[in-house]
Length: 183
Image 1 (spheres, helix red, strand yellow):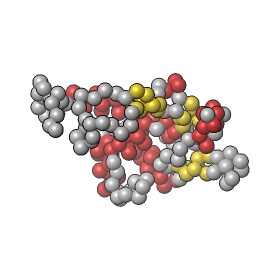
Image 2 (cartoon, helix red, strand yellow):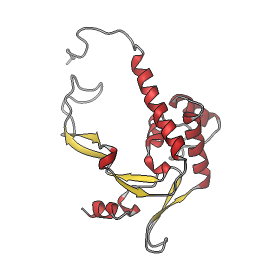
Image 3 (spheres, rainbow, N blue to C red):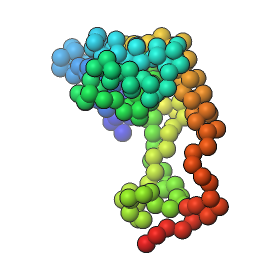
């Protein structure tokens, strides 16, 4: 309840850690109100990633390759970037100036045809995580790193990539796939 109250009043304290490109400045250092401070070198990388996807129409794999070829370390200091990291970075609304609180919500477990490969048949957690519609999220103002037009172009490109990926056939399809599992 405390985090929800803070988010409704526009406090950065309700959010987790600062995303790549920002540094969290605690309230004791920022004069009573916590804030995000832009890290210039990381902000340059974020703007470059958005330009590659929004303007050059690169795929996430191509972005990862370019970052690795340029020797830019990831947020955790690794020499390589993961596609899921780039995807999460591109979908984060904080980069357009409006961080979101409450982007996900827990709910009933989604049914599965079979357990994932290498995972136990009985899941560890009895719930699933669901995305919350943008209208139900609480927006908190932060300094923007990219223009809203560029952010919108990137979202369109990600949707196009998703549509194109689903059209591609991956491997053979079998009538009884997923119905039988080896013990």
